[in-house]
Each structure stands twice: as C-alpha cells, then as structure tokens.
Amino acid sequence: MAPVKVTKVLCIGAGYVGGPTCAVIALKCPHITVTIVDLNQARIDAWNSPDFKLPIYEPGLEDVVRQCRGRNLFFSTDVEKGIQEAELIFVSVNTPTKKSGVGAGFAADLNYVELATRQIAAVATTSKIVVEKSTVPCRTAESMRTILEANSKPGCHFDILSNPEFLAEGTAINDLFKPDRVLIGSLQTEEGKDACAALAAIYANWVPEAQILTVGLCAFSSVNALSAICEATGANIDEVAHAVGYDSRVGPKFLKASVGFGGSCFQKDILNLVYLSESLHLPEVAAYWRQVVEMNEYQKRRFSKRVVDTLFNTITGKRIAVLGFAFKADTGDTRESAAITLIRDFQSERAFVNIYDPQVVEEQIWLDLDEASPAVPLENIKKQVKICKSALEACRDAEAVVIATEWKEFKEIDWSEVYSTMKKPAFVFDGRLLVDAEKLREIGFRGHHHRPPCSLMKIR
Ligand code: ADP
Image 1 (cartoon, helix red, strand yellow):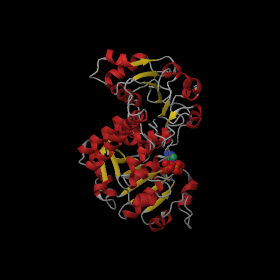
Image 2: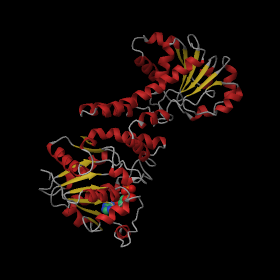
Image 3: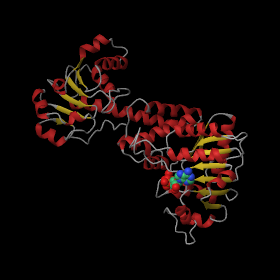
Image 4: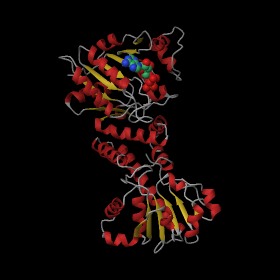
C-alpha cells in the first residue's frame, strides 16, 4: 500500500524542470523534505553556492531557494542515498532529442530516463512512488514500469505516475505557483489511485483541488499528441502549453490561426480526451477539446465555402483540380486527410473533380471517397471524379486548382503551362500556402491573394 502522506521527496535531475518544480514544492510544503540530486557535481555546487549563483536563471527562483535551502530543501550528488530515503521520486533527467537512430531529429532520447530508472530499481529497498516528470512521450511511464517491475527486490513495490510538465522557461516559478491545472496519470488500480492521491495531496498544499486532474494513463496520449504536433509544426510545446494553460479560451483561437491538424491519431486522441473529460465530470475541459476538433472541421468547411464563393457562388458543372490527396506530403497515408472533406463538399455542389496525388493509389482514393459519401453509390461518384496521372493532366480545362497537400513537386510545376491549359479566369486556392502567390498572380491566376491567406492547415 502506497504511503498516503509523503514526507520525503527526491528529485533526480537538477535541471530546468526538476530544480524549479521541487524548489517550489519545498517552499509550499514545509513538512516535506525535498532532496534534489544530480550526477553533475558543478551543477549541484552551483545550487549550493553561498552567494546563490544558481545554475539556472528563472525570475523568482533565487528567492524560493533562499527561503528553503538548508531548511527542507537539499542539493546533493549522492543519488543512492537519496533513492533509499525517499518515499516519492520525481524523475526529471534530460530527454534530449535523438541525434541518431529511429526517430532522430524529433523523438526524445529516453536513455537517461532508462538509466535513472534502472538505478532506482537497483538501489531501492522499500516501496516507492516514481513520478515521470518531463515532457517525454507517454510510453515512458510504461517503460519505467516494465524496468522497475522486472528489477525490483522482494517486498519492494513501485507505483508509476505520469505528471507532465507545463511550465515555460522564463515564467517557471509563476507557472508553478499558479498552474492552470496539474495533470497526474496513474494506472486505475487501487495502488495506482492511492499513489495518485499521494501526489495530488502534495500539490493540494497550494493548488486548488479542482485544478488537480487525475486521469488514467491513456489520457496522456492526447497531451503527447499535442507535443507531437508541436514538434512537427515547429511550434514550441512550452509556449503552446503556456498559452493554453494561461487562458483556455486562447486555445481554439490559437489553433484556428495556425496549427490545425490531420493524420490518423490526433483527432482520435482529442476525441478520447473529450470522452475522458466528460467521464471525469469536467464539462468545460471536454467542451474545450471538442472545440479544437470542431475548429479543424470549420477550417475545412471555410475553405470549400471560399472556393464556391470565389467561383461566383456556384461550382455546379465546373471542373476543379485537386492536387494532393495524402494527409501530408511524403506519405501515401490518407487518414483524416483534408482532401477527402473538400472533394466531398465539391461533389455535393455537383462539380467535377480531377485528382492527382504522387503517392496515393487509385483504389485508396475510391475507398475514401466512397466512405465519405455513404449515400452516394460509387459509380455515381466515379461519374464526377477523375483520377489523373499528373498535375498538368488534372488541371487541364479546370476552372480552379486546389492545393490540398504540400507535395514538393507542386512547388516545381510549370505554373505558366498549367495556366495556359485552364479555363479563364483561372483560380488557385493554395491550402498549404505552398506556392509563391505573387508569381501566380503575375501569370494571371486569381484566387488566394485577394484576401488574407487561408491556410487549410499545417499538419504533422
Ligand atoms: P530539463 O530541462 O528536462 O530539466 P536538463 O538537461 O536541464 O533537463 O536537466 C537534466 C539533469 O539531469 C542534468 O543536470 C543531468 O546531469 C541530470 N541527470 C541525467 N541523468 C541523471 C541520473 N541518472 N542521475 C542523476 N542526474 C541525472
């Protein structure tokens, strides 16, 4: 049985996450002894420096450390002693982006987490709650569990919690003092829930209980889906999380302006989060996430509406070329692809559609279109839709071109030639803001440069 009232906390890793987080815990929980350990002697020396020349700078951090250091906050390189004494251990070691191997350039390197976890298993002689405290992928907690279970000594039980970090560098202390919410994930077993309650009780010393959300570990796929999207789109997850956390109304507007999404996982994860929020009686949270999905649909609808509006309010009987069918470039994957929705909308307006995609196979396109319009027999769809072998073929005699996937080859098309084969006026709707609008306008194209750019979406 997990200890319900924790009095000894250890943090492995005295970096940007572990340092400020555990210093604030020490400040807000004078009854808890907090020890922060690190392998890096110079870093620990800096945390312990008499003139408070701390190894990281965060506004307010020095003040926190001045109040607690030597009282109930200690810095040390003795990792083993720390592990032995602690009841609850935060693991906040570095998770750098992998430089080589599978996922290089975007996946987190979990090597340090693994080593720290193995050390806990090797050293611990009593049961512990182990908290994964970082912005690393959801399978981390699962890997930690596997390692701890396989290596624990008899009589030692480990409960693994996930407690993702939302603080932004530069405002860490403020973020920690007034978090919009704290997320704690655990297995939904008795022990898992007890461990969750023990960590929640620590935060409850300063965070209103309504803001401490305890969820099953599966919910974290959604949080991590967000970070995955951020990695893929170049957004900074800290900034996104900060924006969302600071004022949840910022979220939908924020996503509307730029992020958007496609692909098979994200929507599913978000919907899962909606479901979870509802079952946890958090209607505002559920509504917020549902809005994210709706906003994405709105982006697509807005786009097809704009095509219709621009083509003099009707596209009936007109031919529209859709370049790209995959949900993103360099893949043949079409799941949740925006092109499917757009083409369905065009079909229902009784336009003719020419499709060209460099990778997606013909059968897949028919499958997707058939599924998107269950009420329309496939042979009728085939009367309206043609699959072409090149972009040029797709654009011939069309009145408008829609770029639905950011394939590089669409950038390199001879747009003057395309223009010469199209009906006039020829329109282009660049859903990916891929081609040079100015150049197209010089050629004679109309369309997307008359209004603010309407980016269909930026996707993973
Ligand atoms: P973050 O920004 O995620 O906090 P940092 O790189 O700032 O990451 O800090 C991670 C810290 O974890 C480093 O100071 C590193 O020395 C420390 N560390 C890594 N592995 C271990 C380990 N096994 N035991 C103790 N400290 C570790």
